[in-house]
Image (cartoon, rainbow over all chains, first blue to last red; front, side, top):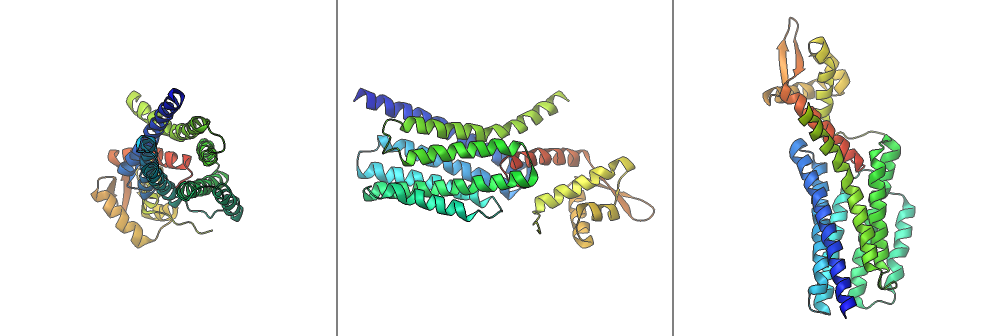
Length: 210
Length: 94
């Protein structure tokens, strides 16, 4: 019982860190929108704020009364997070390769077979997030090949870590006890995604010293 | 492949074109048309707006006028270029 409690507590701390990092990316993107008026930044900001909100709601699930309420809170959180990834996907222009759709289709169907209805719905929503993240990763990769911006590689690594964390969490029913580790991978992905904000910090430093 | 340019990118391209002409005392309309890649009517409208907002300075010369970046325009362009790099890090264009 004590082990379970401390595991839930550690999980909550990791998820709180994820919320902070995702909200920080959203806040930097909002600054970009205010400075340039570009709708790209508005979408980026909305996307990460929704991801932060989704993780926050999912983090509250273990504290809801066990059973139906917990499942509903979890599904709601997953859905909000998925909408966040959808907003991120909207920000990209290029079309995704058919192969990605096929691979994700298999991943969507695989873990659902033996799950009860509500858990299955949660997995389905998470699989949609996974699909959207793969889409965004593919588009970011295409952008990198097209424009050869080295800073884009960092985002690709971040997106892949985020995708890996989400994918592993889909199968966490099979690997019980590893949920916090999978959340750590997700957190690492978000931290890597925050690192391009360093571009703005470097500029502020240059402006201050000049 | 035809690439759609957002209004923000059109403004950034125009300001960059004006900045390039700054060393010669200002950028001519014909040079801006070529470098910013837009129609005459679109550019006239946009330059007027940017002059009104204090980002560009219109310098009358014997035949027509030249455009220069104001301090506010220079700061705006610098900020825009920083955020452009930030967006590119996410595989996005302004």
